Length: 240
Image (cartoon, rainbow, N blue to C red; front, side, top):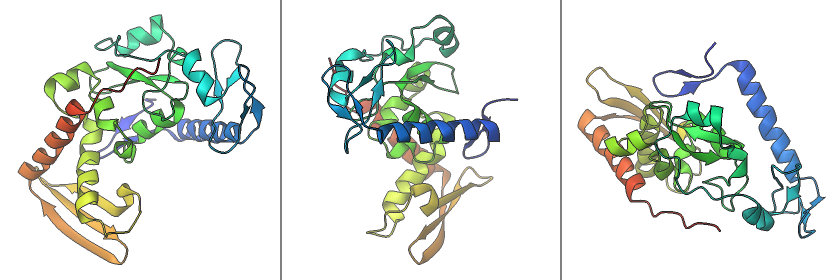
């Protein structure tokens, strides 16, 4: 049974795998509420604003400050490498910091492009789950730039397939959402592809439900702009 199945606007995962991912997130959140002394500086990890981190050496728990020096910062050295090769031969994603978290947490997996099978970089469990679900991932700072860490996507200047509708949804949410409403974008904007390459989208915000037509040319322009955003996003400074 495949771990991921692509439908017209999202990835679907088996119920058992979804349960495992949910349990992973719940356990991770519970660790964040458990007071534990940092093995380096003694700071209580678990206080408000602090998230515990586990290193690869003996499972030591570190505070967010100390974990920055305990793990490696990824600087794109495996760009263009096949995910299957990295998974088999290493290095371990757990030896690196997550590319998207602020402050950075320990990575758990090598995130990769499902269109081309190439490594994008190390992500923590939470960020990787968001990327897999797709619908809210582009709300993260630097998300489009991360997607274009796939060498093929970057060369072609396009977002991967499973995030193209998300780019439209994000744009339409910004343009059409009722001001002052803080609802998830995938709940505010629903999109349906049409035979002519365009889309019908429905905005459901506050007390308003209204449908519109998005021509194919405009959809392509929005998706291209999202890709340009990723290509021009400032490079993150090395953390150490």
